Image (cartoon, rainbow, N blue to C red; front, side, top):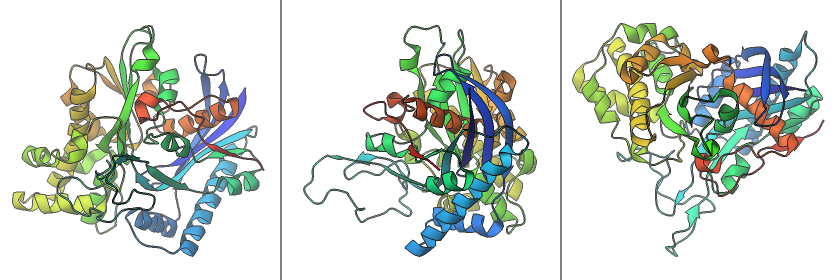
Length: 411
């Protein structure tokens, strides 16, 4: 048995989710016992700085180093606190804080994390490492940056720490995301029924799990980012309240409004929803600039604030449903929600309405914490890294091979 801490701060930048778990087995016999979980809010100034950088604000290298240090310290403190009154952990898996994500793409084409067909914010110059004017069709590798230095976390806590999980998959031609489907497969699959595990964080992502008794079931696992999760909703609440509120608790505000379905259909023409999996995205597409485009689109409809939130909630729901109907081999027998959006009761009701008669539950109801599933996943990925077990699924990320995920730092 290995006691592991999993750490992650997601696209919503709500804070650091920390999970303390005991892990045994390898993959087929993997077992995880949840010991403790807690979310540690970032200090307001640090959160504002992270959101600004994620939104494209320019900073100097010195400022980036300072931000990296501050996040590493916050993650280390979370790791120390979650262990208090428990037997100490032997390993840490830290996803860190994503501040930039660019999916791979063919030369000359946009990635899933860039702006869609309406073109706002499109980058017109080539990035570093891209091909020049030779006009070949070489595939450009993706790039994803998570900060919060593992070496610092290892030294402060005295615990071996695994970080930088996305880099090896990206180097192998993959998206570097989503990385949790293999963990989902061994913790949440069912012998008889097919399941979709739908995470609704800042961005939504799905894992499709065929029945485990089906021959070659592992090869039929699929996963990809479905589009916006909570990000646009949170940004809209902040906009509508001038920063007084950061999110719509339980979806109560949106529930008093009426979604404008014509507007939602317009938003669903975004290029991302037409792209075949594997695909991934982030705030680079579904962020502040996208929200302002949505607000401009909504002006002719004269929506109330509640109606706007209802429409944005409907966009998250409708995008999930559209992705399922377009890209899944068939409708799942059950949908399991996790992430912060699983607590949005209005969103959950709307999703259940769209997916009837498929039951929509949370992973809590099948024995895995919906609030801390992502943190648990990175604890497992760190554990697999120390055992030499690859953590990615090539059919999910698009990588050309299974690879070990993460860089290991010893105290």
